[in-house]
Length: 370
Image 1 (cartoon, one colour):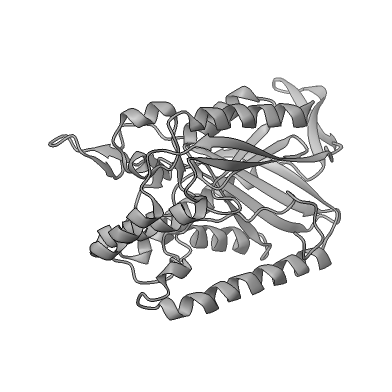
Image 2 (cartoon, one colour):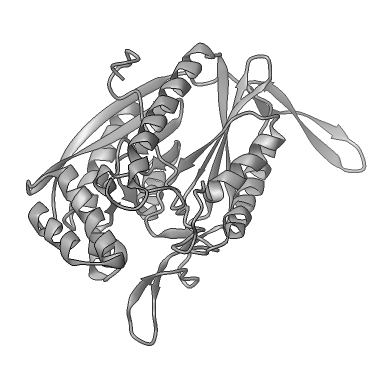
């Protein structure tokens, strides 16, 4: 923001969260391949700077239109094994999953399709531990499909609230799973986009016509876009859970092997990020683009959080964005802490934290709308 003279809060770094991407924490510099981390991170930063420069140089007056569709890719991923009662991260077909798909079409005044936005909630976890390829996961195949059908206009994936959601095919070794999942989402996005009216238009009743039946005809008329933009950055002090100290995590890293060591390394990285305090100053980013509201934070929200906001503000299009401007981990609701799921085991925050964030976000949205 400083480098490009941006107002604080007007830049959000939002990750697609592919699990086929490399883990680039500097703490892993001594691990196999760790010597590549520093150069990789520098390349990412260089690319972001380049993209920002290109975005500023190619600014155009455009209209953003949204379509609401459905895609059955997402499934609940909190599976209870009936034999033991153990909770595992696996597809649970017995719990309904939110299938809402939001597709944004950005069109220049000349009518040229400038870019597409696809907002959907499902972990990009098509690929699992046996995969050895760097992959954008299902986002890649989805993006290729949409861009192919829109004359190469850039397609941007917006990662929705998917703390407990995953795609139908997940944790596989073959990239075929990622491609199939991506095609399912891509075709659903194109179908939703095809339902949109011409940019800057709406339909109104025109007249009745007597024929074999009395017909009612509709026609297109101009619709003035809502150009109001607003942004709020809020913070809320959250109490941390009962976490090991930094030294305790370091001892775990030194004394464990295999997957236990990796889990300890991740815990250490997060503990060093949030510090040794018993609380954390949690940031929330809320944007208003016309009637569209975007809510972002450096966590993975549960989908119920997104559903709640959409019910609370039914006249607005609500997009919750996971993993914005950093990454901590999950923000489960208080009710989820009664279950022994993976997300609860690694959660950083106390059980009442999601409720506090929910109240703060609701107030921020209300402030932008009034």
